[in-house]
Length: 286
Image 1 (cartoon, rainbow, N blue to C red):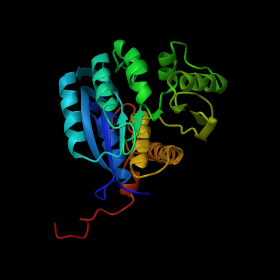
Image 2: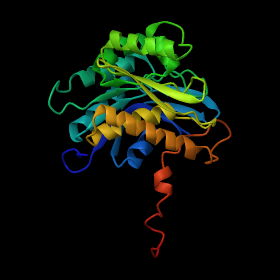
Image 3: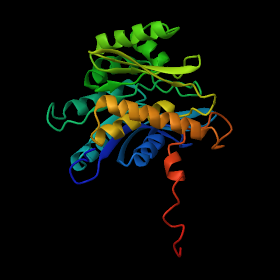
Image 4: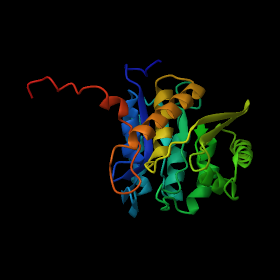
C-alpha cells in the first residue's frame, strides 16, 4: 500500500447526510476511518431519517455544494473520490463539471460512482431529473460504478433483473453504455448466495459470498463504495480494492446483526475491527 503525498491517504465522499448515522456521509466516514484513511466530505443533502425510514430531505444549493468541493480540492491531496446521494439533476451536473476539471492524467483521483436512488427503507432519494444527468454527466467520469439491481434497471430504462443471467446481461449492457467498470450488486436478490457481478473490458467476474440472514443492512451500498474508495486511496488496484471492500462489508453485516441499533433496519457495523481492540484510554488516568 502506498499513502498519498504527506504520509496519509485521503478519500473524499460527496453524498447526503443520514441523521441516524447508518448511511450516507456518516457511514462513509466511518468506513474510511476503519480502513485507515483520512476522510473529507462534501454534503449534498440533509435527510431526517432513522432505521425505519426517511422523514424528509433538504437538498443543499448547488452553489454551496461547489463551494465545499472547491475548498477540499484546493487544499487536500485527495487520493480517491466517491459519490453517493446527489439528490437532484442540478447537483449531479455541478459535481460532474467540477470533477471534469481535474487533471485527466497523472494524479487525477479515481471516482467511484454509487448511483444512490432509493434508501434501504424504500424511500426515494433522487429526483427523476437526476437519472439522465448521471447517465450523461457523471458516468463518463467513473472509474467504477456500483449500482444495485434496481438502480441498474433505472439507468438502463428497463425492469430489474430476475435471476443471475439477466443481471449479467444488465452489467454488460451498463459497461457497453457507459464505458466504465461496473460492479452490479446482488444484495437485493434472493438465494443462499449474494452474488455481485464485476464487468470490465476483460469480461465478467462473479463475486459471491454466503447471504447473511439479517435485516440490518442499512448503509450497505454506501459502505461498499466508500471502502473501495478508501482502498484505492491507499494504493490498491481496482480489483484488489473491490475484493477488500466486499470482505469488509460482509464482516460489517455479520457484526451489525447484533448491534441492536434502532427499531428498524439497523446499520452495517463499520467499526467491528476497532471494537476488537481496547481503546487507548482504557489504562490511562482519565
